[in-house]
Each structure stands twice: as C-alpha cells, then as structure tokens.
Length: 79
Image (cartoon, rainbow, N blue to C red):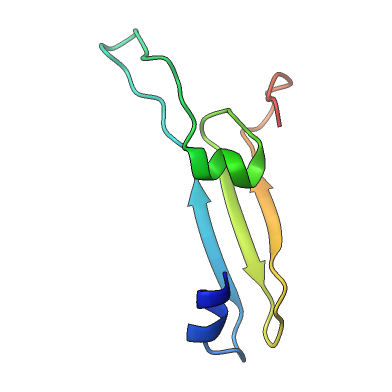
C-alpha cells in the first residue's frame, strides 16, 4: 500500500481489486478441495469462493477503506 501511495497521483482516487480464489473442478460436477489464497485470507479472514475485496482511497488521502463483496443470499458464508 505504501508503494501504491508513493507511485500514484494523489489528486485522484485509487482502487485495488483483489478477487478470492476460484473453485476448481476435477470433472464437470466433482470439485477439488477448495483452498483460499493465503494473502486474501490474511486480508479478509474469509474462506469462501466468489468474494472480492476492494481497497479504495479517496483523493488526497493516505487511508484505504476496505469494501468486501459477497455472493447474494448465502446465509452460510463464514466472513
């Protein structure tokens, strides 16, 4: 995040988009055991697939606001 701040135009907003790991299938209906990317898990604590983390920084700011996008209507998401 420090490198992004140093290299970016501070008068503009910055967005960092980080997707979670995708589900991978052995065949059409048989999935491999799902494993979240370690970095994504470290940043969010989420182990579910199909999640996106967006880190947004407004213009002239050093702070990043995390926004987590989850699949709609799944009450069993462990985030």
